[in-house]
Length: 384
Length: 136
Image 1: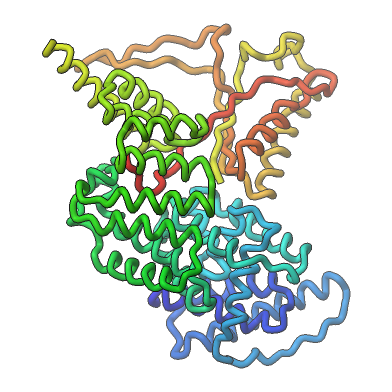
Image 2: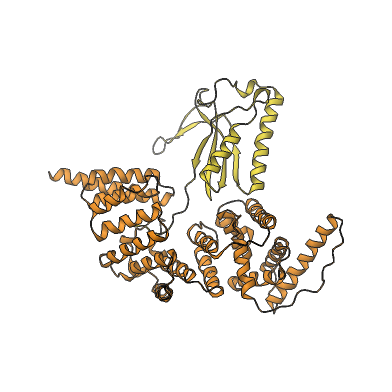
């Protein structure tokens, strides 16, 4: 077996070579996937990249020939594999854009990006998202048909690429591939291809969140909220890197929402104890974030920051203006009510939050919160 | 993407009243209904939205533990009148709206005379993996 990542890094390079002139992305991508699967089960050749190109090229020829004979049409294809040119930045960037094509739904863009740019196999992607391999294969081939139908002239933009990578980072489930790490790897690559401070912002945001991964979930799978995390478990190397990247990006004075979110994450990372969190500055960044993305989720998080920076009552006041349907709103309301001394309301709202939770860990966490506050409530009653 | 569980019921209490029980349909009507279900699953396989599906038998039991060293207590078979799960399908779709749209289509499976039965289907979101950090 090879170093998995080294092999996967070659995948977009080999694909770029095959689609050098922008022809038949779908078939070329299938051919590269076939070569990748062969590589994963073969003895490592001396020159892996050359071997991959040759193998993918042979598959490509087989596929186009089979296609051509089906259509009963004579097609001349070069029988020599294309040369192993050094990877071209624009070609690689174009792959990212293609996979985040505006006609694709977010989840299909995710699947295609993981395969064509990330070099994962269909099986790995299917396992990661807990769907059958056949379903994922269909999703990917449909995505490629959508791109072929739409034409490659309008290949998407860097914002869509970033959104796709952030989805990979946030919504991975399981399997043997660490999707968060994969999202970081791909974002790092993207940052090297395109000069855009927002990409650095996204990368910093991912690194700073990833630094907390071991303290966020206990061995038994239960969640630990930010204020209860063991901060000595945070990955200081990732934090140092993330903070350096976001500082450099902010200095370029082309602010965007990922940079703002990274700045907030950096302020959390900066506090050795939760009591030392600079909520005033965090609140200022949330106000900034509203300028870029005035969404209910941002307003919800701003209410938390306001509750910490100013007071629970002010936080609740801000919360009143937040749409009732926003996920986790009840949990935030419960937290602020508890902080404000209204234990009965807090217990009620934690129970509501548990009922509305969309994942098991969150449901269990909110159930424990409700139980904890109910216990406090009972103790207060006894004391009277 | 989000996963949804679609539940089909036997003796559905919410089933439209004018539809007679399946056992009273003609064999062709039954076949057409089953074929519709198969085609529906196959179509979702093609769209990349299918996760899993199965039907469960009507005969079953309620089972309850009865304490240390005692065999479990059973109750059943189910009474005719109980609202029982007949089958389930898990889909993985891009939106809540899409889940509702698909459930609506499934509900329009053909019944007597090939008319859509418009049965009620239960649609339940499947819990996902936890997201990123939170404060409370």
